[in-house]
Image (cartoon, rainbow, N blue to C red; front, side, top):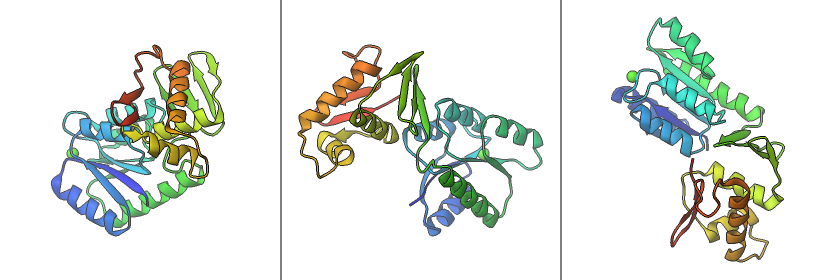
Length: 228
Ligand code: CA
């Protein structure tokens, strides 16, 4: 199921949009201000984001720029006020894929959402990004390459798989058992200790201070989560 984030503060429009998208089979998250919108966009994997420009707390331009700066290339459609052509130029410059001036026809928005999701799926993005970066670390998911600063980081296949899974599901807490199922698969028979060992290796290679991990965090009594 395609997952869409709507960042919009007009209650009526939010309701119409989310009802319509859900009836078309999308799973929908809503943020009513810019801060919440950015947080959700950074911490969950969406197939598309519908982003209003004028929002409380953070505006749509800032959000779009920050999403792109984090290496996330999720498709973004910006909603602009009517006839603000300057909005369009700025929005596209900051990395939006499309824009739509308010008021718009629902069918028009749906057509554009579907076109963008198709295009993004065709280019191999799926639900996630082809790359991700945090701190001084850059990850290329397609070529399974990682660098820290100017240095290339060598990861084993399982370390890379674990890291990619944590990043794609960042912000969520995962138990060791859940990580074993998701990353190692049911056919393998490693123990939960295997997860701890791989986490320790990842921290050793990626964290600035592996003893006090900033990104790959332990949630005591439960498991691990990735945060940026
Ligand atoms: Ca608004």
